Image (tube, rainbow over all chains, first blue to last red; front, side):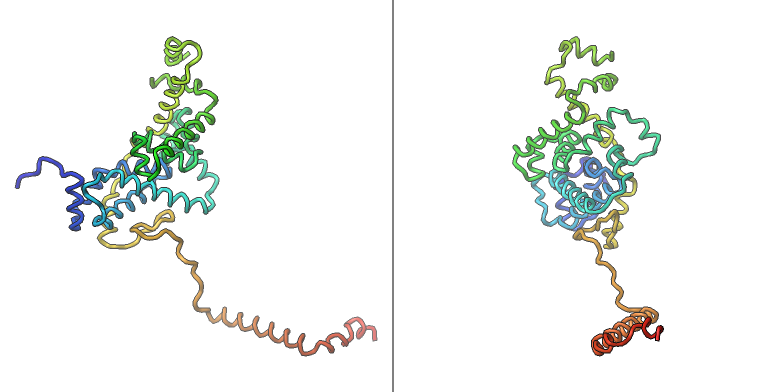
Length: 197
Length: 123
């Protein structure tokens, strides 16, 4: 039997998924899992929770397959579900008392990696990361979608179901907040950054 | 002075203009998030998802219900049955409380008129 030379499109896979084809879900998972997981991780800053969100996101794809319009791009929908699940998790967690150590760990470390890996991270990155962690959730989500996923303002507006002006404003205030937290001007960062530019 | 600073000063003079600072801030934010951009997805995520779908069981992790379940804490477990010991204790407390109450309600005058212990002792 000849192997198909072209990988099926999202549209084809959603059609197959609507016929309860689990293999189609596997292909969609393989194709989009990284963006979902990394987005969730950047927002919630906990690998175990990000994995839960990844699973839940694709379960929603599976369970709501009939309601997904195959003619519309799947990626914005996945981002939307990921962001909504992250919001849900963080709002739930807000009510619970997190330990002081957890809070510090979450703000400083992007992922709970081995200590030697964390130790390698530069001081600059930690400062910026801590500042991003201090942003409000609304601003952090926009920052993650814009800087991590490289999405445009229009795309983010569609994902978050917000006017473009609101997204622009959130991004602007997020940057101002970061600038404020990192110093009146960011010139001190240049010393740290010289090795990368 | 770092290479970046030297290049910046050469390009913009001693004071970096706002645009350059904006670009630097953008770069710093993107760089800080770069770690997340390369984090590998945990191995076995697909197997777990497939198993969850196949078995249709709820998996609870970090306060979340997976499998399209509403997000809420499970209700507090309240004891539907008391053990013999608990029942005995509860009945004892109830009865003693009831009898004390009955005495207080039924004998207010006697309670007020009866001599105190110290009076009886003195006599």
